[in-house]
Length: 177
Ligand SMILES: [Zn+2]
Image (cartoon, rainbow, N blue to C red; front, top):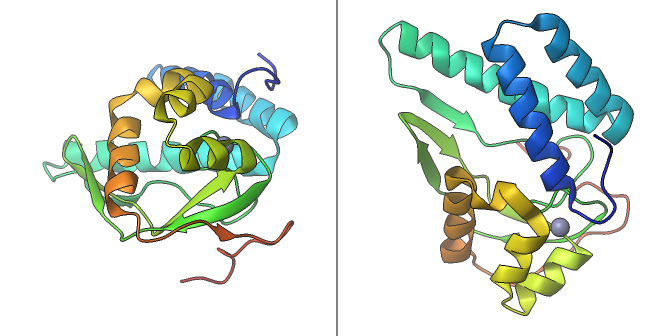
């Protein structure tokens, strides 16, 4: 499994997430750590952070359920380190679309959407052409997952404006509350 050139980073990350989730379910800590190390080596520390964020969220939801509580509220992801495209995981990000925050129900947990949808150049072109099929094809298997479909739909129906350019190498998320 290597970082893709012909397919999107989202396809790579989707497979990696499935492997990490399987190892986590099997309590195979060595394999989880091996995959986290691989993600960092292959994609950079920000991909390791994303996997760790997913694991933390999954563990919190499990603990709450075990205690008889609903899943609680969590953020979908974070873009604190290196910005990546919210569609395909690609870099560099060139713009974002503002949207009204919404909540996404995943089983009994609530996911907070944030309010900016970051895009790479390729996805911006597809999006602005209204080519949702092209976007799904480029993103790959992850685009067919129910939570991903729901957040894409939420973004489509909550978008409030056109693309706002992001200066190369800058991170407009840095320092935001
Ligand atoms: Zn993209």
